[in-house]
Length: 366
Ligand SMILES: CSC[C@@H](O)[C@@H](O)C(=O)COP(=O)(O)O
Image 1 (spheres, rainbow, N blue to C red):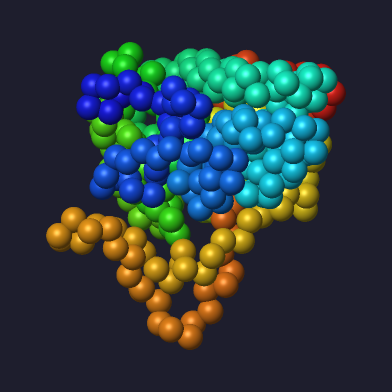
Image 2: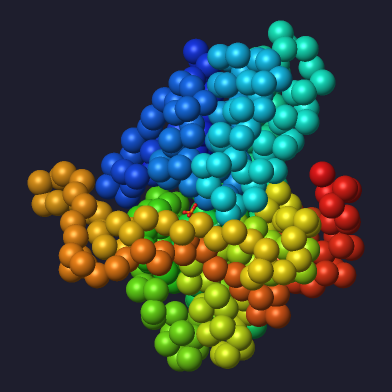
């Protein structure tokens, strides 16, 4: 997508084989890039959220394997790199999907070929992510057009949560892909951007990238969405996903469930943008079967921002001594609250039969 008129992706291969990424920790205040030169550095970048968002985590892991193969391309090294990368973040299934896919393709190859092959496979996975998101956005565009037609003569208000934008993917974004395509098609729209405590991905990332593309948007506190829906100020919700089950339950950034409840109560359509690598057909009941990452207490107790002199600062907002140890990073929205899944194959109802009809069995899905 565009930053000041220049086309960017979130991850790329440098000429010397290092991997370049946008360091999301500095946004929206500074646009900084980092060079990752080893698998260990990719692990840190994923774990410490220099890169984040389910599809981008998968893409980064693929390049992490390429860097690992550059160091040593034996079977043992492949297994070890997969295990280490897999342990970085537990919830988004794209990580496991990317590692399974690359290791399945690399394993039959002679070790001498794996280095070059792994880079090619990682690049292929990234290009595929871009194509998937573009096509998913195309199907979302049809939904947005239909919603706009239901409200002629006024702007369409779309609410999104967290960052399911191009920064969370290689390009386009998932939830935002449809929004960018609708905006580019001249549909008059406005996006309510949930700030998304505790890490504020909405405030620091989604608001920033929508702004760079010129999309009208307003940042709101997480608790405002329900009120806006009650007052007819939200026509449509579109959120991303970190994992969707075979039954259509959606695991996404913490707070998504509350928005889905409010949308249900106010008859606001609630759509989930789901690229197929985010579908996990091995699980059915999202609530019981998905491991939810519990993140650091500091995310609750502290906030980060920019000081008047331009320094990035983190300050404490909670009293010392108050427990901040319960910090689930994600929640599960039951399928019954999801109006539909926007996928690269079309819009799919969030139920087992529709998902099986569109994506088949776990074996076929691989
Ligand atoms: C397109 S990724 C899904 C998002 O909506 C969202 O849950 C997300 O960005 C993941 O959160 P994060 O914890 O920042 O990696």
